[in-house]
Length: 319
Image (cartoon, rainbow, N blue to C red; front, side, top):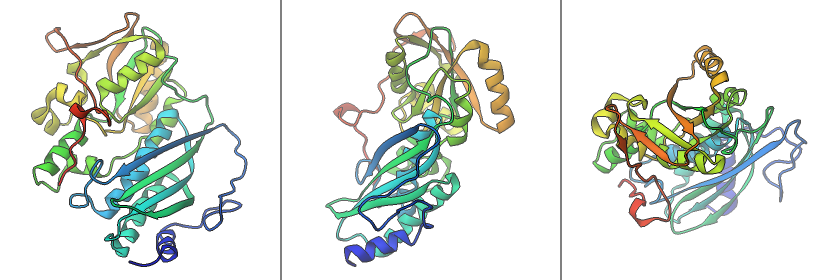
């Protein structure tokens, strides 16, 4: 395996030079002051927790590592600006795979105009990629608090695809739309910026809609009623998982947004003009509990979502 500094140069070669006062190569990055407030997030993808090398290409890993951080910025309505990347590499990780990982990450970074400004390399038993990303706000941030009873709940895209993709990978399938959603989620950055003009609260759906809605309700001190028949599901997810299965699916990285009724029509029109698919799925309530209503009007018990530290929900990586 090449030495540390050779690996650094190989990785950096995948990215354009950042337009900052001091970028990669010094002890710290130096960034010009921002006009707006900054959002900062950090997240990691870890081998045998979020992926296996048998079922994810190196490019998939690089894409997903950045995507999950961009999704956090999207959920706050931020414009992506800079990121740093810490790579832990096992001794058997080929140098050519490092280049592929960098290219997968760099392509997504280019699409969202976010610049790599620094990072770190170390050795480890398993591969992991940890990113800290920064975004700039031109509006007040969308937080989990701030929603009120009567606000309408909207979700972007479709739900459950990443969970179905994981199950398909575990079954030996390697292609298809659901597999791609698992390997290469698309952060809803443009929708987040649009929603900042309308939303009272929101977050990204990373641990399953039921669990993430619970986080929003707890922060805003409200309850919610979800209409299962309204959940946006692909035909494949509807057939394989159904609405209740989709609720438990993590890693969709869609946005869940609370919109005051007075702004709902304008929000829907703005989304339609921008080509952003959103679906109303429920309403927030004064009674602080989560109620699921099926197509027949029956109330159901909410399912659990993904919890990194709960044995019952610990993810089994494909492979």
